[in-house]
Length: 114
Image 1 (tube, rainbow, N blue to C red):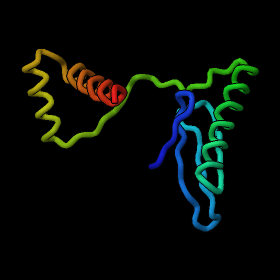
Image 2 (cartoon, rainbow, N blue to C red):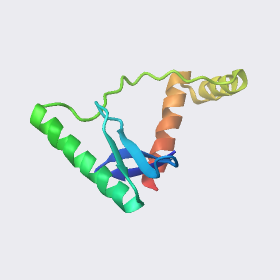
Image 3 (cartoon, one colour):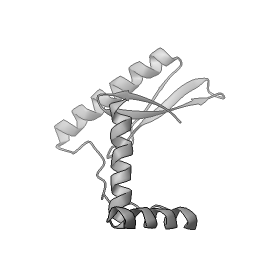
């Protein structure tokens, strides 16, 4: 999936060959906000405008703009990977949950640092 960012918000981007238009939506928010444009320049401007309008609307209405997450995540693994993680967690003196949490935090921090 192609994405763009503005003011910390992520926009998904697709193209409709039938309509000859780029389109997308703002991801990770408490609502559905779409944008579109016939060129990358138009799409970018429409995305920026959509984010700005959404943030203004949320401020006016007293609504939290960001989608809330519970912090609970169900991850499906192969039995082999599950076993390997269990052994690695045991060696590290951690629960499987703590081991996976640490591994994900390291991966996310490395991605953000780039």
